[in-house]
Image (cartoon, rainbow over all chains, first blue to last red; front, side, top):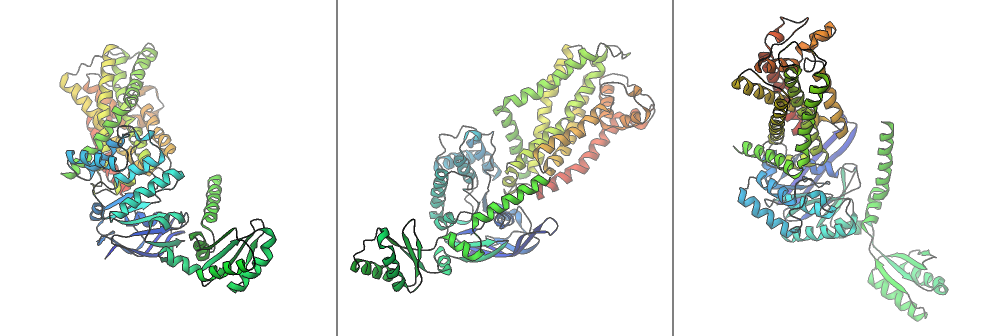
Length: 330
Length: 263
């Protein structure tokens, strides 16, 4: 069963001049994780805001847990959890205060709200910081508390909008651990991210979006295959580079590239490990000792580049430039 | 029923904020007390009121109204901050009554007013303020002040939820409250103002509130060019009408704004 369905969503801003969503459709199977992957401004947050009832689309339909998001937003709010880009908790209150308050707003009784708050604090390793104001928390702790707040009543569908943006590597690792635990528990999760690695780590399926449209979707493996097969890479000592290049090209049947600084020879291969084995054998016969050798599958970065014609990060930088310019004009 | 409960949770949150940062309560009380003392001793000596008891009798209603008028800024900046931090989004994604957050916030701000008015009243008493309208009327006067503060709080809610930038909120709030409190009879009689300003001042809700409180506290109001006009003859009714009007416009506007808030 599909827990989330977005069908042909259109959303424009600025009187139709900015198209945030351009007939976007996607769905999430119950109990699975879909990662919506895309650069800044691709429409990720707009999608989440529509599905979590915060924003009405100009046209299109959406259901969450079988409930119509546009016609029945109140019912949708009862079954979802939302954790946004910013840790949306009260900074001045303590972690405990926040969770009790949100528990009460989910209509738990006073006692129940307190019990649940302690449970969640424990589960997210925040017990020690429970009675400290949020403003003393690290970025990672805030995000964990924010996530805890969205789990108070065990939502049927959880939306996480860029849960690790702005965290340091350690905070990100911690957050991934927490999310992986959740996923094991069988929650239906829609997660947006601009980190290709994050989608790869956490999601069952990935929907790549760009300019308000889904441009590709599938498992991480399927997407990587779409971009092409594997690449064979060999590193040898400099006196053997020429001979190795010849061997690799002969076996792969493609022209090989050479990075002279790294003494790295690389070539696309279609036969995978068989080609690797043959190359090693041929090198051995030629008396060449390979310093490093391996088969590389394309990264999601490569996927993104192949699908959109630009790298995720480049687009981001470009946008930052534009927004800066706009600000300067103001 | 649950809408009421949701609202109470939000109001409780605000009271809890006061216990976590007691400085907020302290400074929102100290500032009006300071005004009372400054006006009482700086202007009090040179303004001849022709009323028994001196300037402080005229001043107190004025400064009470000015203080509750600043509720507008308090509500506005509180909500703007919630918007900025994404808290509004979280509240809007919860299965709670769509008006709970704004109603709870305005109620919380009014509760703060009770404390502040109480502290000011004591200070006023210490420096010679002696309302002579009788206990019931004095009580009614304070009820009016709270009601006026509550109504203005809804204008603040609209400003806070509409603002794109947190810093704009304070500027807008002051742009609204400053002319209103000073183009009025709050601190000096309007009789010395140019004629057009006198008309503005007499119709100004701050003036009608001040006049209403003075009446309830047992003072005679003084009018210049506008003597005999409806607001000067009926300050209590006019003030009530203003409160109802403000709420009738800004409650629905603010709730609508909240529902559509794009944080």
